Length: 204
Image (cartoon, rainbow, N blue to C red; front, side):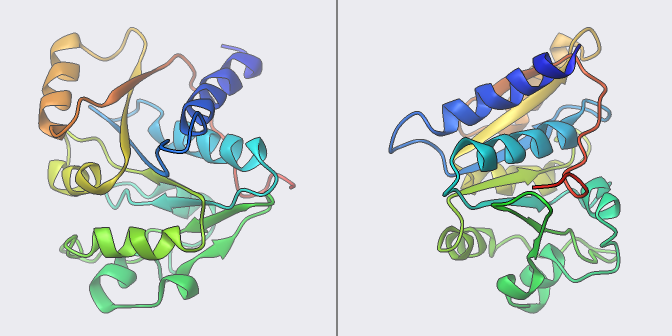
């Protein structure tokens, strides 16, 4: 899949998020199983949203405590982040860091510890983030691997996307994942690419 086709996927999600005043402001990205390319899709969507409107302020959240690849890529593995905001009441504005892309900021995963931080404060955290950001993109772990870390986000996000890799994800697993997410049927994103998107070093 060439880079133009990859960007088309991101821009399709971005366009959906901008379609009208009632469009989702917070979108959560998950997958059924590992290695579906969810993090790359989340990064690409955040980049596309930031580029869609020069006035947009976009927040990319690494909520994948199972494999916080975005936080590792950013060199923020030891930084305070989402975990501390939820567990310790650490100020959200202090945990958020700017990226090289204008209009895009990042909330690293933080130190989750042996037990995942409490997720009861998700709604309040997102409400706080909405004061400063027009769009929020959340990168989640696979729902069939860690449903307890995904379902609470799906309950508070405006829209949840389930990323599936073409020719790799069994249909029965997709159905189970959609049932696990519950609430409203998630929208599917068909990912045909294995490319990685580097949001940190790309110049704005």
